[in-house]
Structure formats: structure tokens, C-alpha cells
Picture 1: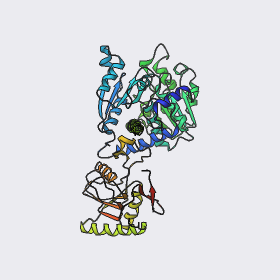
Picture 2: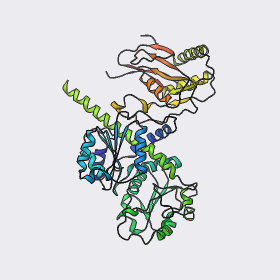
Picture 3: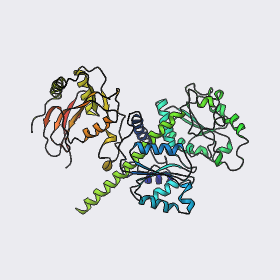
Picture 4: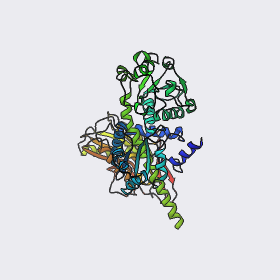
Length: 339
Length: 169
């Protein structure tokens, strides 16, 4: 375990190994990742009932702090919290406090004064969720909903759930992540999860300009030629071309990118016939993926969205559970000391 | 303290008791739902003994427990499985050992999220006299009082056997 992974481990887990924050997949072992997937399976069943709600977070308040715009992630976190019976505050910070000059710490202090039990944080700065987890009042759980180029752990876990649903296991799977790896916090979390869960091969397929330096050190092989990279694939994950994060000329043109790295029916035909197609959304049709593929029989893009609700319910209830259990332990230790 | 009967005998008593109750209430086609884990084993046997053709349901109450705020989430939760529509149906809810009544409260809360049943009959292999809530079984194989610190646990599924456990006090 690297120093960073060890630090993340201590911050995210209670002494007896329960989740208390969910910031990154670094430092989380296969057993815990599998527990998250198993718990999410049970929440999928809840989503099929006539009343899709359980009382786990009744009486607790979840604040969605989105410093960066997001539709899908924010709304699935909101729905997840509501299905756990929590009260939900949605704060679009772009348009409120910070523009009036309030600092992040002051915003947080105010939200804690409103008795929030959990913050779901999306921020353009890598490490924002960590920073908040280190400074927040004990007992408040922090969930990372994407920080800069660093991590997007709930997205990676909902992708793992989708893969397990379709393939049954990670053993022996060949998985490729295609496109803008450089700007993608999703790719980093996915590579980490796939390696931890035992996938046989993780490939990244991208032009050199859209790959981070030393990408192999994340635990993957690199392929610049998509036709070669598609061979024998069981899972292909397309990434969105993050036009808003592009600085300088990293790409010749969108049309050129599509010709080389877009997922067309012809390119998909090079993979294993049962290869599934995934995309974290929102999709740019005709830029990274052909419409016929996105809507085709091998696409599982919409079940990723449904699975996102279940994964977020799992992570939120597990982290809240870790926080309350830890508080209870401290309380009984304190009592023990007094007697 | 009375002597604990064999599981087979308890099952006989449960079956006879339920047959009487179903006849008395004119219930012809009940559904059987067991609470994980022990209750599911008992529900499986009971369903067959009562000649119920529909498959039995399995309830995992982890998301409805009232001790979440003390111990957090059960890490080994598995999906509940009710392979039928419960709306308007008569249900036999089955657990292995009833103690405080808290499990049954959680199970009934969960059941109502699937629909509104016509009625619920509560059946337990053993009824321990240690209630903390105003809930009691309609039918039980045996009622029993345990010594302080003692627990009763059903092991199974094949064969089913009841075991005493000593807990720390």
C-alpha cells in the first residue's frame, strides 16, 4: 500500500474496518468492494417494490454540495438519499455562497449548524472531498461525487455492479476504457476497481495526447490502435470527450477523433460477440459513440443509471452506519472509563 | 425451565396449530414468508407440509432493523425475495425463534412496502418469553423461558437443530 492509499484507508474506515467516508477506492480491499456490490444488489430489489423506500436514514439530513454542475450524478444521489428516507438539501454552490465570497470552510460550518449528517461533494479541485473529510465534525460522513481529475468512486462502483450483473464475475475478463483518459477521474477509479476485483486485463485505448504520464502505473496496458485494442474484449467502456476540460490543442478535430476512437458497429464487431458497451454519460452521439451502438443490444448504458441509485444507497447507508457505530463505541468506552 | 422439544415435534405442533387457525379463519390459499435465516428453513418445510403450491418468500430485514443507529448496517444483507404479489393476500409470516419482537416489527414494516396484505398470521418454532414489544405469535411450537444470558439458535438447514448459546452479560 502506498502512503496515499494508507492515509485514505485510515480516513475512510473505522477501526474495525467499516466504511465511514467514501472518498476514493485507494486503500479499499476486495472484500469491502464486494460488500458494497452485494449491498447494492439488495437495494436493486428495493427499487422493484411498490414502495421503493427503506427507513435506514430516517431523521438524517444529507446535503448535496455540488461545486460543479451535474445532472445525473446529483439526481441519482438525491433519489438514493430519499429512498433511504433521509431529508435532502441540494446546494448548487456555483450560483450561491461562493459567488458572494463565502469560504468553503464557512459554507461547511453553516451546513453543519443545520445538523447535516452527510455531505455528498462534487468539486473541480482534486482532493476536495478529502479536505472536507479531514476537517468536518466527527460523525458527519463525506461521500465523494467526483473531485477534479482524481476520483469518482461511486461511478466506478456502479460500473463494477453493471459488469458483475452481466458477466457474473471479474475473473478472466478483458476490459478496455476508451477515449479521454487524461481528464477522466472515472477512468482512474475504474482501473483501480477492476484490478482489485480481479479482472484479467485492463486496457486503455486513447491517443497519446489524452493519456496521463505513466498511465501504466495505474495498472493497465496502453493501446493506441483501437482495432487492435478491441480484440477479445468482454467489456468496453467509452468515456465522454470532456470538451470543457480541454486546454490547448489536444485533438485535431471531433470528426478525426470519431474516426480513430469512436465506437462504431464495425469496431464493436472486432470484440467478443457478447462484449457489453458502457458509458458513464452524458453521451456525445457521433463523437465517441455511434447512436446505433449506444441504443443497440450490447449497450447497458441505461442499466448503469439504475445501478447508480443502488450503489449510492449502499455507500451512503454503509458510511452512515460506520459513523453511528463508531460514535456508539466511543460512547460506551467513555462510560466504561467512568465506572 | 421446561425441556426443549425436538425440531420434528415442534414442526408437528406448528403444522397442526396452523391448520386449525387457517380453517377457523376460512383461509384457503395463504402465502408463506420466512424471515432469514432460520425462518426461511422453517417456512420451506411448513409450506410443503401445508400443501401450499406457491413458492415461499424470503425476507431479509436488515434495512428495517431498529438498531441501525447503534451498530450500523448488517454487512451481509442479501436481497429479499417475494416471488408473488402480496396485495390482498393472507400471509403466514414465519420465524424460528421469537424473542424481543423487534425482528417481527421490522418484518411487518418491510412487508407493507410490497403491498397491503389481507392478513398476517405469525408462526414461530419457539416462543421465548422475553418480549420487549406488544407482539406475540398466533401459533408456536413451544413456549420457553431461558436463563439470563442464554440464547437459542436454530442451526440448519439439514438437519434442523436448536442449540443453546451462552452470551456475555
